[in-house]
Each structure stands twice: as structure tokens, then as C-alpha cells.
Image (cartoon, rainbow, N blue to C red; front, side, top):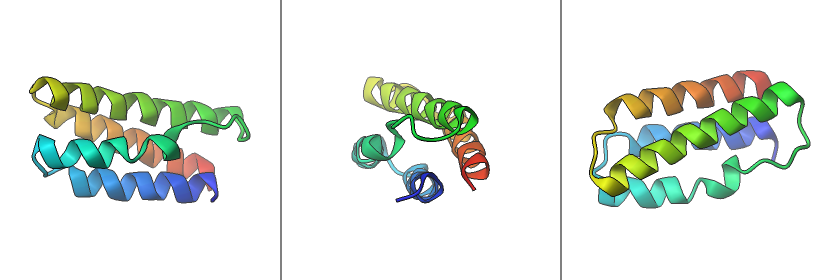
Length: 89
């Protein structure tokens, strides 16, 4: 699977999980780990964008796990994933 395809799957999953309660969103986020882990095979810009998306998704997961608000974190993660997709084309 190409990096663009991975980023697109992550984007779709984030959009699907965004409006879900924490107990439903967390398993979706956990399922993204394999897609956002880097392999170091892409250009540096793509790897940095992927890494940014990964960190943003982790921040959502931590907030949801702790019962903290994550509304603004979703926008950051979705934006980071969009950047990853645009660079991976």
C-alpha cells in the first residue's frame, strides 16, 4: 500500500471517529497505528508529515483516554493527515 493510500485511510478513519464517543473512537484510533508507523522509505518531507499525523493522533488518544476535551485536537490531526496525503501524492 502506498503512503498516499495509507494517509487516505487514516483521513477517512479520523473523519468517521471524530463525532464518536471516546469508547468508540479509541478503538478506531488504535487501529491506525500500523498505518501511521513510518518505514523510512519515503522522502523526508513525507516522513515528517506522517510523523506529525502520528503525533496528533496520539494526542487525541491520550485526551480521550483521560476524559479530556479533544475537539481542537481532531482538527489538528485531520489537518496533519491532509498534509501527509498532499505530500505523498
